[in-house]
Image (cartoon, rainbow over all chains, first blue to last red; front, side, top):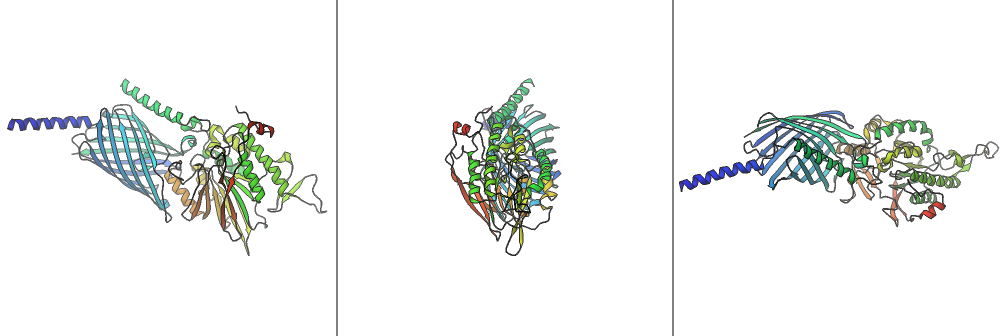
Length: 238
Length: 365
């Protein structure tokens, strides 16, 4: 009986390890050891409304296991006078060679300059392989200003990202386009970007992103709306 | 490494190809998917130069003769070879006695032939408009100035030189804004030859019961889905407040919509911060009615104290049999009330033979 128990325990450990190895697809997923993650970034850029702008974002993410994680964030854009918070829950599953992430998110933004409060709810699915991922979803965006409220009809959320190295590699550079970012969901406005990361060790990592946001979409794309850069560090612990 | 680069290249090229092919049609410039060829900043810079030289001519409504007036608004005519719906709009305005016309952009799809036909329609309507409204200016002896052919519009006291060879670019008071389809295929060159400016305003002085009031008409360039930095700077620097008049009604006209009529129509393409900036600015201007186009669908709502009207398209493709709200007439009463009424367009597209018989271009390159 004791022998059977030892065998069963060993099998369980091996299975868990295998599962962790199977489910780990880069540092945006649970590595089987570190369940907590905090990131701090500095954003700086320029847009047509406020000119040069600067701000910070802070995120905390907790992995419950290989499948479930929650994420909370704060956005402080000092020049834009834009302040936001968000909470996100994500479920991760592996189907054959695809990693699939289903997420639900709520975001609140206060545009102080225009005394506008924006509420955003989003549900998305992300399909991911080693070098690329595609996101599809829907956003409900509502805003209050000047005593009135308007909720826009459901907006399509879309994004795609391709990287030079596999996601599990120590460093990477990628290209992206999408109609959302950490603290906004747009309608048809596309954000074109180049991102990178470098992992110093399993706990420390730096990352960055440079985004260009043209105004409008499709044939309207001739005018710049915003260019913005972001650099930050991520720390993970058990 | 080699494999990873190949995967990435394939992924990126697929995304780019998908984007380009998705928008590759005659009305949309494929290269404009990534980056178009006229920016709003360029257009507004050019417009301000033209506006400052045209300002005296644009500022036409400051006589002491206007008490009540009306104007017609249409949108997204997408004229190709048949400018029939524009002609119908201009006819309707003349029959009713509207003081002027406003158009919310995407006037003609960007081919030379389409713009030639549009210009011809405006010139034809200008002839009729001059015949209907203009009276000869009399000299001290009570005789007309035969040599100079000066004529006056008694409604506004504006003076015109009535010479059919001298209608440049046209005389009928037609005030458009530029739309995204007006600038694809480098269409700004065609548009600006006819309409000169994409960012402008004028004021009407109205004689009320015991006083004078001013109504302001603001035309904004949002063809790129943004007002752009240069236009925003001009607005912030007080372009619309430079004469310090006390304004009774403000009416704004621009192409790209803010409000989305329903799930099946395109959403606004302003980035969110700019969207809130514009709504805030409209409230600052104490706007009476803000007119929007672009989505080819009707939407009417009050937001932040502003009456927002998003107009349906007036073109033959969307409405081959016409419709009863393809135009809007606004009548501004003596007390300042702005009354909105829908106006129908019902003309049918003409055959090539009919158009050729009337002197229109019917072949395209």
